[in-house]
Image (cartoon, rainbow, N blue to C red):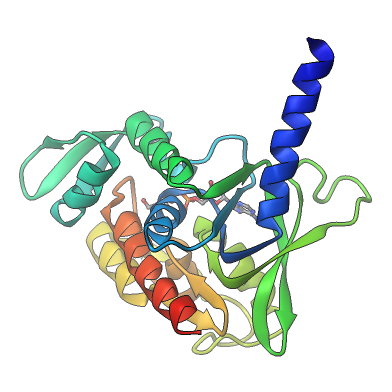
Length: 255
Ligand code: 48F
């Protein structure tokens, strides 16, 4: 039995890893925008891989606000919540209250069940560039990055989505070598002060392709373009994931 368990795990993981080496869409970061995009891109029939540096996907959802595990969403994402089977409560002013654990686990469950391959404990540490186009990312086991002298490997894809949240890891890595259009002075602009309403709109409006082959969604949009920061309101993250899924699907299908 013990031998069999090891064989099953090794075989199952090897299959997922092998499928991840080349895909249509490689999503870096399993937070709300990345998971939403992953699920919707699977509905378009694309081969989707999500890498998440932590053990649990869900990003900033779990802790709600200040560790109080409840979050807020707006009316325009209720159709998505219905599709994901996630419950919500009308709290007035076109705002809805959602259990943070149900949102994080529900998004994760549907993304994986839709057929996206999700590898946790895998972190992206750099970007691959071929013919002046982002062609993939450099990855390693999270607990190795910066700690042990272990070389990374690469995952390549037709499209790469930076869904790493505040850090905008892939855009930052690219910006060290190429100036992203609109980004001045070789550094990402960084977030402005808190303004949830403006930030939600800003994220969705500026979601998109930022360099050939590289798209940005979610909170990273504010880091890259200098949008306001925001608190535990997540409608914009889901809307950003939905918008970028449409953009990527159109681009990959046209190629
Ligand atoms: O931070 P995160 O939830 O990003 P998001 O989808 O949503 C932002 C909100 O949570 C919140 C907010 C608005 O409500 O202010 O911040 O834009 O999820 C990002 C995910 O990416 C993972 C990280 O662990 C998290 O789960 N991640 C970050 N860097 C890497 C990474 C990396 N280098 N490689 C792989 N995953």
